[in-house]
Image (spheres, rainbow, N blue to C red):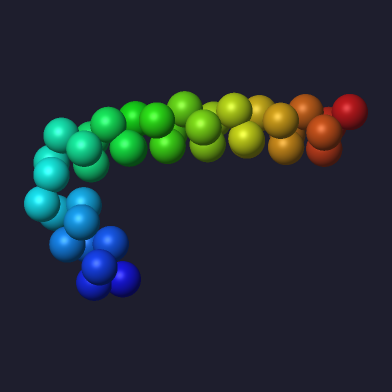
Length: 39
């Protein structure tokens, strides 16, 4: 946990970029999961 915090704490731009890509990936995953559950 501390390692991840230090890595994300040092480069702020990298952290923001990772968050944006992570949110997009999560949205795609959630959409796929919801579609499989509903269908």
